[in-house]
Length: 97
Image (cartoon, rainbow, N blue to C red):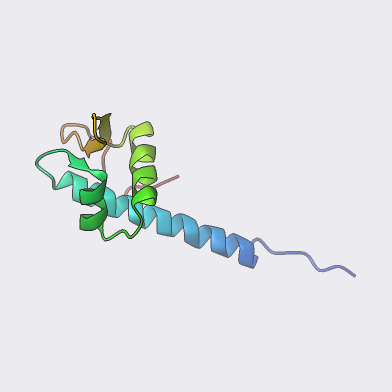
């Protein structure tokens, strides 16, 4: 007789943890940008957010731009990012679903 596999398989738990971790990193980035008075480049966001990897930081920032959570602009050297404080969509601790 075969046993049914529950929805809490180790693979699902890892995926769930990864999603929670990604959401935490996104919240850190949003917190840093919401407190910035001027647009910030990837490296400054990375350092102030406590993230370790530049490429991952840039990927998360670009995801947030695509989702409309933050604004970003490509400059001649790199990207800069900022939060439009008048935009009510940016809420730290929001539901990520």
